[in-house]
Image 1 (cartoon, rainbow, N blue to C red):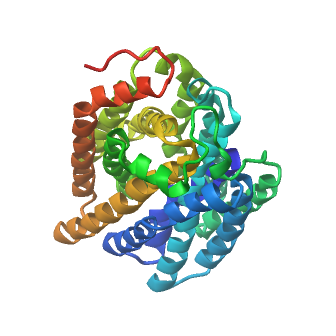
Image 2: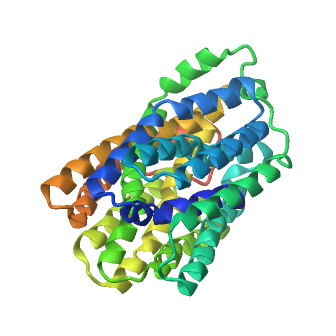
Length: 397
């Protein structure tokens, strides 16, 4: 958890600043990000199928991190828009699925995911912070430092994760995950059809499409607005870590939190926090308030992202649990952000590269996701009960 998240923590919080230093406009950045998201229409399914059908999940992490090292090294050496686009897209197609695949890996090896996953996931949040501390120290020593250093930090972290992948516990290929509640004769395609016909899973895909897309906008474009409003670069990383620190604390308390409210309400809280976070960035000039609003980002991760992942783990047939998790990326980090970044490019061109309008658009996406989960709350909770999730889930009516 710690090392895999640290790879992204070195790259993504500084991506817009790195690309801006390369001379790219917001519109050009949006084209790269939209293209990277488009690849996630294919690669999540591909990596999920590998884990469920061909390669033990622990060994898949070895392959993914070899690819990450190569892609990051190539990305760090590019100077043209085309070179940056191709290498970043390749990195993103391998990195984003690796984070979601940590979930089925963890769920398989812990007895009670709902109660125990939070403590484990907190290490991922801690990993996201570590590179920002390193990069802060480097920028404090040399404010004019080339931000290519962020890519070098990510490469070093990916190499460490590559070594750690050989220590991961053996995780059988997904088709062998047949316990007493499953039909051992169910084929992979039959399990996929069963999953696709589950209306609760379809509701979760729509919500994840909207909220994760909105979340990706805040993650990518927030540093640019903070810098425009006068924040020194050395503080960009630590400012974004405020929400991650809250994540760590909430993950420690997650067991108590989730047993007091329904799954639907858990996810709904995360959706509302996403709306509020974007409205603050759309209308406020107060740097203190903008930094503090990252606390809402931490709430989105704990309540929405993890809430959805836990429900998917419960309702998906065991034969396709890795695929079910990675299909979330297809919608939430693929189709959604691809559409969102395409819209961001249009908005930036129409408004003279106005970041405020981009955040207002993201708030509207989050509001739509909030409405969908609100309307589907009762059905979601009934499905949770049907799959024998822990019983302390009050009705969401």
